[in-house]
Length: 387
Image (cartoon, rainbow, N blue to C red):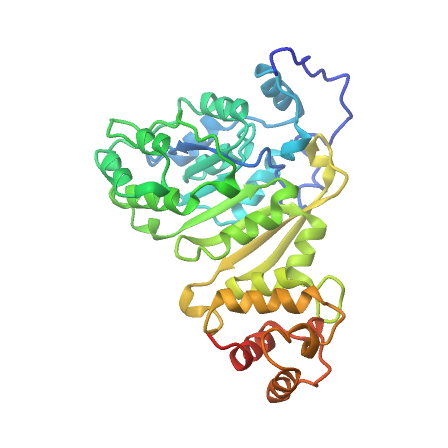
């Protein structure tokens, strides 16, 4: 498969931005650290926590630039795979800005989806975080494992095997075995799974639980900091945002057009869609900064941007009798986007009842879905849907 892949050469590749940009460029908001794969291999990586973070940061930091990225790929006989959306970040400063945007601090538990060559992982570890990195590409999983093999681990993990055994069928056999009692946490065990199909909720429960047992009070909630493939953005957002019981915030590097659409889409525009209702139902989104495409290898055809989703707790969700029926109604409304709601929602109740409900909400009987805010949809749902 890959053993016969021809090594990448510097001469055969297009020029990219230098690793250390000029002073005028360093003010750019964190550039999207190009994500490297979907997901599937949980690498359990614990950072050094010996109190001398500055020394650790200086010792562990290595440049993740154009040349080092090529060397890393060649070491595994790899080339970026379009099917996995692999674009590698070439600017370490952007990774630093991304971690800063997520306010990653010592003791934080961080989920990283698709670590690739480990450029962002390196920054997260040096910030003092405990990182759960999930990588679909087994070659890149091996590369990251080897890169951080000397990273200082947890010193006490006596209860990890027991904790894994209590998580039931939601956690794979390999994951449970990787948490067996030992002197150190190992992260050589991998799950051959796609992130969007793996039991991330159970994985994080296990990691947070084990960290609590090590006297880390901050570990009630984790964070997500990732450079994800553009082609799975919506799936990742839909999977992560309802997990306010696990994550406090989700910080993602996305295609810029997607980032703008998720955060800034306005009523009565073609960009206003059910995903906007979903995002605002479960989180408070914020567009942070744009990342030029020149910071990636291979260079994508679009720029990227960083978005922070501050997740809501269940008690803060809009009051609906059923989230399932609520989003079913919203999707039905937008399936006939140019249709009036009194037509597109007739499978729920009669047109007359819909018109009366719209009137009660203060909306005209001829309303269309792109004219309703999330709060309008919540009120309408509670009036016409009987659960």
